[in-house]
Figure 1 (tube, one colour):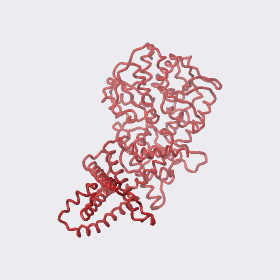
Figure 2: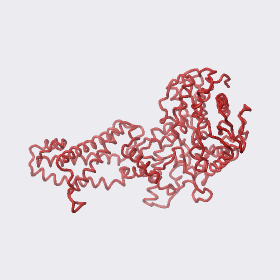
Figure 3: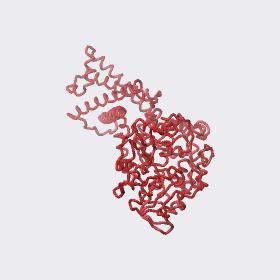
Figure 4: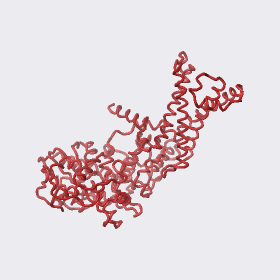
Length: 614
């Protein structure tokens, strides 16, 4: 019951106001004209039917009457015009503008045709009625008056006869439209609002857990019937608008993956197996290739853009869970990463000491029963990757310079499990999560801080489900709070700097301003890339992308590098270990090391605030 209020707000904002559709101005105007035109027409028709004592046999509705009827006529005329303009805009968009991601099928033209035909018939009827009766209020029906004016010379008898049979055509067309709703994309008129109302109320970066994982019958989703009822509902709501494809980094980069195609393939499977019951249900892998789902970076751009709150990422993870935990059909590099996490506690599979990166004896390790103000959760990248070790050391020196009381867990810390979970190994993730929660509860601290947005999102949004509710901050948030305490002993990084938004820090957790504020505090000259903040473009490292091999022409990180070069940046500043590695790899692969370099925001701040650069 506590979610009824927020759900109703979502229905108003996204179902009636349609906020996400308005992100594209042309589509927003087009859709608003059709939606509100139809809403007014349907309401007006219902009012007209109630005048006939059809639904209330002993009561005649007394509205509209008098001046109210004049307003009613004007609104009905205006609504019909709005529908026709919106339909013509839709036709122009498909015939002339033809956006790259727009897909056209027969039911698109059917919907446009009916939206043009029914108002046209309505205006013809209104014109015939005005011509035959010549009412004083004819001016309040401007379109009807125009039609009536075009009939000059026709007999009243012919007008009445034509009105009679045209009325039945109008009624028939309207009934056909209503009857066709379940069988065409018009079903979104009903299913769309239901999907908005029913969408899961959780943080965008949070995945649903498999409860009682050691006892459940199905691990992941191998057949379409194993999706939740909410997911099946959302499959039916998809109108193939292509907004997800417009922002999907895998699709844009030329990979053989599309969130829209995924949803449509699953919907086709749902209709065939659950609605038509055509033959025995088969595994989804027979519809999708085993490799298909591994191209998704789980960046969440598709789910954020969808007007109907369809979440392809959650479905991808469910399908991966089945492949990893049930069928075992896992690409080689993914299997190696999962094996590394399982055996060595990190996706690199390195056996090194988890605190070996620490080069300062003052960075103490917190033992069970001890306390600190800030607990630095290091994460796998900073503990094992040589490039990210430099960032961790710079962060430690900044904390020390600001006088922050902090400590690390050392070997008591294990992988947060984010990579395992996004790759589908839910069992391994839950094992690691419970182990970390136990270690964190064994010590005392006021807050956790981490360099990695993937660790940050997991600790903040997913660990509470396993009893680990802590105050968690990203390093950029903490530094933004204590930046005034930092010295000014260095000098700004040379060149123009552009900030790359991490998907898991930005889109998933809405942290955009603090990293930029830190760059400004560091005194750099800063520019923005075209795709930024909520519309930021993925580096390609999330969702297992760090370990998936793709052709040079399909690398997402290379496309992101193009954004930075187009902004004429000399330095790309990141706030994520994966982004740092992926963009640095793009620079080296493209031979652009002499044009641009990649630094973490922390390194930029350290260059300005500390004299002893590493």
